[in-house]
Length: 182
Image (cartoon, rainbow, N blue to C red; front, side):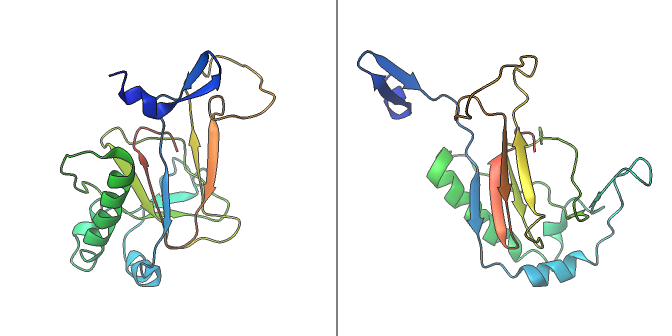
């Protein structure tokens, strides 16, 4: 096992090695997927609000949680799987056979957001952005480990930061470990 660790360490001083364990790779790619066509299809889906009361939610999810099984969207599935296979080959190098188990549309109102959540029923999650603008379309990831500590830092490093934000525009495809809160 020690031989494998050579790939994740660097010497920072003559007698000190620094190891970066358990990285969380976020894969972001701008695709040439026809998002306008998919957006026109998405508008036909029932999108009930996730609000508990009228003033609370700015997000709606499609009632159908397997939209890629619908005949009109099945051509998109192999495109997404090909992108996932590229992510796997670049990062994970898993030999398992993967499949898309659930798929849905999400609509977030301008300046809206979803509650922090993760997907415990999957290993990898993915998002294909269909419509955004310059001020909306962000996805944030939050590390809730060790939140009981209130340690102040002088600068963020890859070892101490707890939140990362990425802006995604229409056509952007993102894959990430499903256990990450976003």
